[in-house]
Structure formats: C-alpha cells, structure tokens
Image 1 (cartoon, helix red, strand yellow):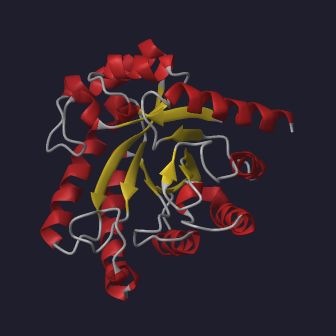
Image 2 (spheres, rainbow, N blue to C red):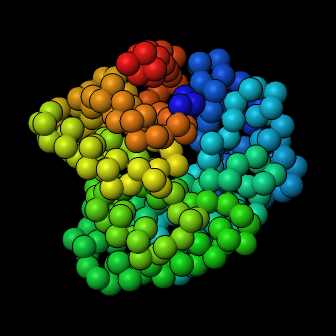
Length: 278
C-alpha cells in the first residue's frame, strides 16, 4: 500500500510547496484539493497551467496524486445547488489528466441544507435515494467522457450511510467507473471493539472488489474524530483485512493537523511494515 495524506493538511499554497510538504512529512501520495492552488475546492474553471503544475510538482516532489477532491452535496434539497455542483465536477474531471490522476472523490450528500456532513432524517427516504441515483448517473456519464473513476465513501451522516448502502448503489449503478473509498472511522460512531471489528470486516467483505482507496482517520471512545493512532480504531486489523482482501492501493490519512502529520505517518508506516511481515 502507498501511504498518503490530504494535501490540504498543509497550510502552504502552490502545487510544489504543498507536495514538498507532503514528502517532508514522510508520505509518497496525496489526495489533492484545488484549494491548495488558492482556488475553490470546486472551481468554475481551471487554467491549463494550474492543472499541469500539479503533475509537474508531483514528479519533482516524488508524490503521486492518488485522487482529487470533488466534494459537493449530491442530494442537496435545492436542486440548483446540485446542478452547480455537477457542472463543477465536469470542470474538475476535464483537468484530471493534466493533473496526473484518474480518481475524483465525491460526497454522496445529505438533505441538510447547511452542513454536508450532518445527518438528516430524510436521507433515509426513497426520494433521497432517487436523487442520488439521478446525480450519480450524470456523474458517471462525466467519468466516461473523461476516462476517470469516482470514489464514493460510506459515511454515517450521508445518504450512503453504510457498507450495505454502498453495495446497493454499486449494484444498481452497475458501472466500472464507481470505486469505494473506505474509512473505518466512518463505519461507526460509538461501538465496542467487537462491533468495530465486525463493521470493518463486513464492509471489506461486501466491497473488497471495488475498493480503490482507503482512508485512515480515527475516533475517540466518545465518538469524536481523532488522528489515526490516537483513538479506538484497530488499524493493524483494518490494514490486515484490506491486505487479505487483495487491496494494494493508496492509504490516505486525514483529520489531523500539519504538526501531527509526521507522527501519524510514522505510526501508519509501522502498521504497514508489520502487516508485510505477518
């Protein structure tokens, strides 16, 4: 597995300064965000030179671009918000080849109009699922046009709230353009050790063939998020199960500060090295 980090963890701006910071932190991959270029995360336009600067910096820093963030609320209750988000997704997709990546990560969304990471009861409605399908069909058409893939992540607060919901969407969409981004800390909020292991095992069993990226975030015992290695997630178990399932893609950490990046990287490298010896 290739160890990486969210590029926007680092406060600097510009493709090369950001990716050098990634490398200096001990990482060889990054999930890029257009905010690292001083742009909105989902810009209305991307100049060719800006896109190419990412690929150039990737080569110079020795950091691969595992994915770029394409987060917008795919089931926002205001349809005009979804229309704008989809248009910006197309802008991003058109620049992927120049940036040196083939994966855009998405947010399947929530009916909460203010916070894309907050649960809303209507997320469980068939209307929300129908809107997700419609939006995903349009996103897949964009992915086909630009020969990229789309990473979707089971997250408790979103319409795709579980591994089972992710499996349902994969089966209904039936597209090789859809990949799974699997983060163990997004499979539970508060759970005992046995339940955490069960949820991780279930998710990998259900989704193994489609996992394109793993995320490494943690949770404290009270359910609040933490940097990897500082909470209750059993990362040796998670990484061991991924390896046993045949996953050898990028493991991208986030939910940490810039100051924490070297220590988290060291922790995850140790887990990866021990999994290789197991």
